[in-house]
Image: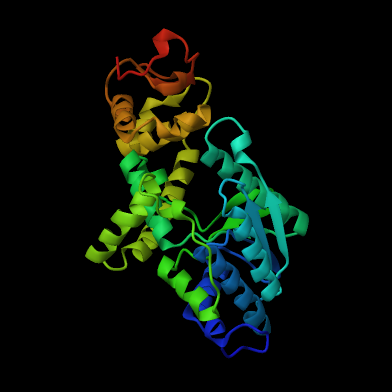
Length: 352
């Protein structure tokens, strides 16, 4: 296989995915020249492709005035027998492409609660801390277009509303001074595998990613392929749709930030001028701020029903939601408050 002067295969350096990710870094992920990026590398095809693409960009585009430095971090969760071999494979790959490597060990199964949730929390915490120590201002993950489509499907099925339909952002804060970026969302999984093949690099396979007993596993094995067969390019288009929704929601949120609220709640006359849909978003934002766990327990029907009451001519109502949330509506104002959720009187109900 022919190699470039920097010892990366020509087939990799010239792969179209390099240009796609380079544009995403500068535009969608807002990564400026001179940035150090920590690549989260598990050893699967997606994260291996991420490492290869970032390495190619770091070496090819520095001559064009766009300088990024790349480091790799592998978080070892100690949950599968194959995990030791995957950690070794990632370390060997980093050595081969001359990228600094760090392994961080976490033990999510030693904590109470969901092992999967613990693993995710510990993983992102470890990545953020590693970036801060290394002076990196960005942590890159290998989420791609199918991942975004999965996220949107799950949001629709949960009744998540406009906020959920934003999907995964290209960039979000991870910790002070460090952003989480997803520069591969313009690519499909097949593109990631093609990048690995072009570089002549093998990857590790995690059977859990396609386990049909899990929601995402079944989506990957059954639903996404079906959608792509019916509407080729559906996954890539979902990325643009999510970005458009995110822009619209950002505009709406700026509008909602200007809605006056005090200890006595909102002025109903002002809320009526916004309309039912916008009021539903306002109530959802306020509910999540008071009780973050309510986000997955409050559906759009409940929000729409409550918003309809608020903008109506009804003189008074009390609406009870999960986690002790209570919306009190009187003739002039609407107030959302949180009471003791163990109180029998605070159980979820509709308008009264």
